[in-house]
Length: 58
Image (cartoon, rainbow, N blue to C red; front, top):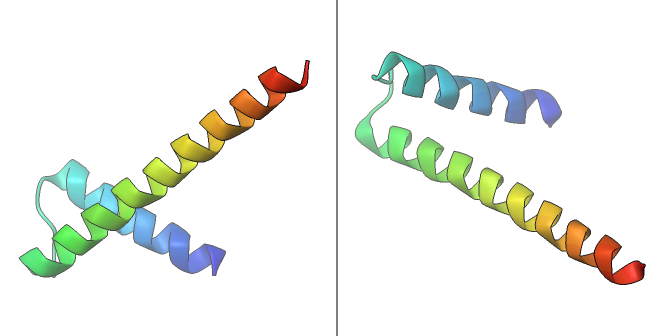
């Protein structure tokens, strides 16, 4: 599972840095981009929630 996620993230990042997605159609590139944005959004929300929780504990 972790390896699959890492592979997907690597593919997306590599595609973004190259400026073109090799062997990928527009649909797949958009889906992978949305997936990356979703992952980052979830991470940011989780971090914010944790910070708020830790701040309220004191």
